[in-house]
Image (cartoon, rainbow, N blue to C red; front, top):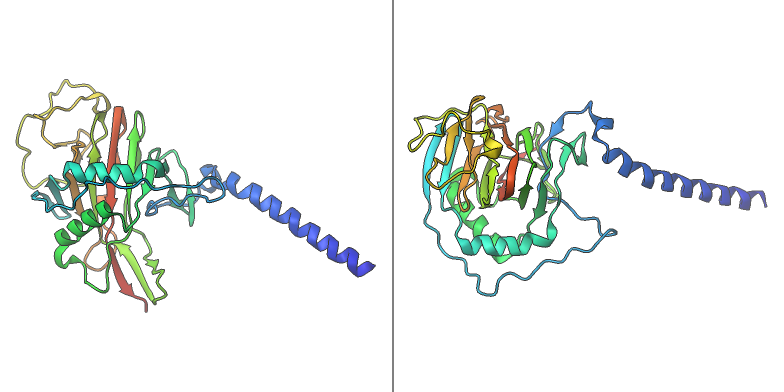
Length: 307
């Protein structure tokens, strides 16, 4: 009898402990202030939905989507660190197909802090992970891989998963960097680690005011050509860009700010030659005033043999 009572008590204790853990984890992870002592880490590649909360269905891509060769133009903005502006990296067909695939997948964006995925006031956008086998995703990722050339080693490095990120009125992403302080372990069973060697940020929707991408520590190699923004213009979040405006400008607080232009992209290198992260490419998604901004994050992974 005593043994049976002991077994029941142990089972009850496990049940109570499990219930407390299930209650406490969402509370802790939903309150970033409880972990404010820990530094922010880069955003994860894409959000994973909780299968117990809802099912996520992927819309079928447009039946008439074809992966077409795309002629794009590049402009070197900075040599050290290397930052390149790419015009017409995507065509309207790519954009339509990607938006169709991602529409039902958007969830509140998160960052990694002390090893946990958290929602913070520093990042208020929404994100959608993209399936690697989607035709439009394959097409755009292959285009990005071709652009990178010998930066990646075939059979060793990889492009990694990609995501869409969406900003609506008032949403932003404060200053952050895409690379990790400590390279991440490979999840393929090999004794390797990886880091995001570079970033490609492609704008899909630009029907907004504000929403610039700001690199406070990057200086242009030459003066911007085209009509300069008026000195008495309103704040950036209220500025309605026109097609006559330059795609980037010298930000009033230092560095460069790139306005969202659908189809265009920014490429930059995240790591120094020795594999350490370059703090100069820290950047921010400035607040959107009105409207909607959607973009695609592409993060190629460079792998290292673990010692």
